[in-house]
Length: 119
Image 1 (cartoon, one colour):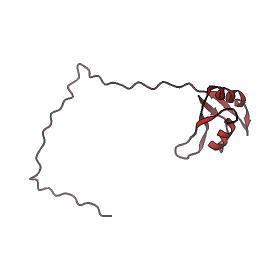
Image 2 (tube, rainbow, N blue to C red):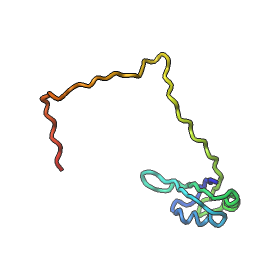
Image 3 (cartoon, rainbow, N blue to C red):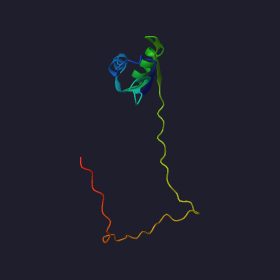
Image 4 (cartoon, rainbow, N blue to C red):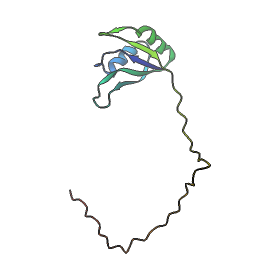
């Protein structure tokens, strides 16, 4: 069961957050969302609980709980179905995509190659 958790302090670690949720059920995975460049926490995370009962207990006990100067928000997330892969179908009016290439023999060229850089 996947949970969305928001409103926790930005300096909290994954282990501290797991310890809070492990009081109500078993956490299987956690992902605190961070900024790609600065690696600073954005203030929300996703947790996966092993069972539905533990997730329900966590939501009931922790949603709206004050944590520092903020309030914890715990909600259940819906799993979105994976996007269908697009299948290319050629248009009937489009030109054929088949190309016929001929290889050119370049063995008799007098062109010199550039020297490689030496490091």
